[in-house]
Length: 365
Image 1 (tube, helix red, strand yellow):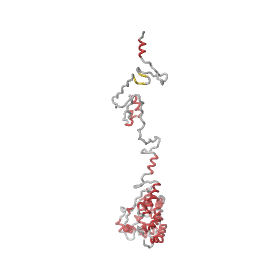
Image 2 (cartoon, helix red, strand yellow):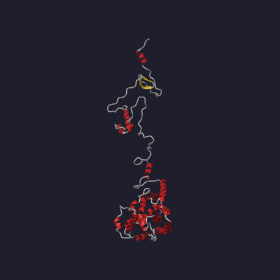
Image 3 (cartoon, rainbow, N blue to C red):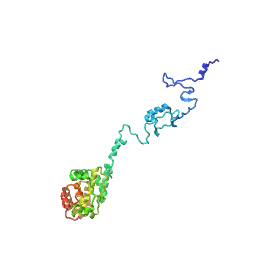
Image 4 (tube, rainbow, N blue to C red):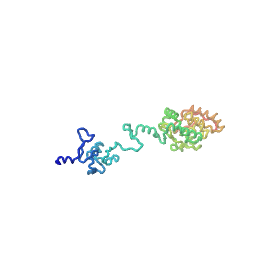
């Protein structure tokens, strides 16, 4: 059999085939020894791994063109050879596996959703709804505890029960006044704003405490003066202005000062009305304050306080003291509009006449 040199070379070479998905006019040709369906595999041997070029770290794959393309997609800093975040470092690729793409942002823990890029963001990265929620629950003044209407209702109910059970629980009485004064406190503030002296009190915000009072100076005032009678009341009843609790549940800084001012001048009301701190005296003062302020706490104290009195005291209260307290409350101007810190030298009788408080009845309380 005669074989020519050309026919022998043709017989030794494998046949060139075209891939089924090759585009017309661009046949896909296999290199010598490559089998159809297994590109890159020559005679069953795995291709040699790529070695890192000088200046590159081990573990990165790809040639210079791939690195340039990846740098162009990541921005100028990455294309210039900047450091890559540990989350974006890709593991070495294996032959036959699809090329993985880096995520545009780091993965989040399970259970957390990434906000949309179109969502408006705040200055610190929070959304508008989250910022509004934080603003609605922020602390308005030192000691303030933000509460919802439902929480205020529960606090009011619980404090009312405890205050009726033990009227000397001043903390429960304070909570009851704060959680139920949402209508009365704005009215008191408006009365103070519409009065020259009351408006100045709101602007300067004086405090009646032992740290602000000159007790020695008040004791040296003449008999019958407001300062001297106030000190005598504190000593006789063993009370202190520092025992008044600061507000916590009033969701307005100015209204919080109004109720704080009311608490601090409560002992001055005892002094002006001439009432002690026993149960009968407290009920009489509560009747006067209920007419003046409209606070539900004062109304409850005036209505349920007499339940603990004896029959004799009830008769005195109903026939003498309550009618006098009601007439004085209706006749006098708002007692919160008096700058008491500047009235210490004024006689008590003169201040009563100025406010419109009627002289107390001649009964033993």
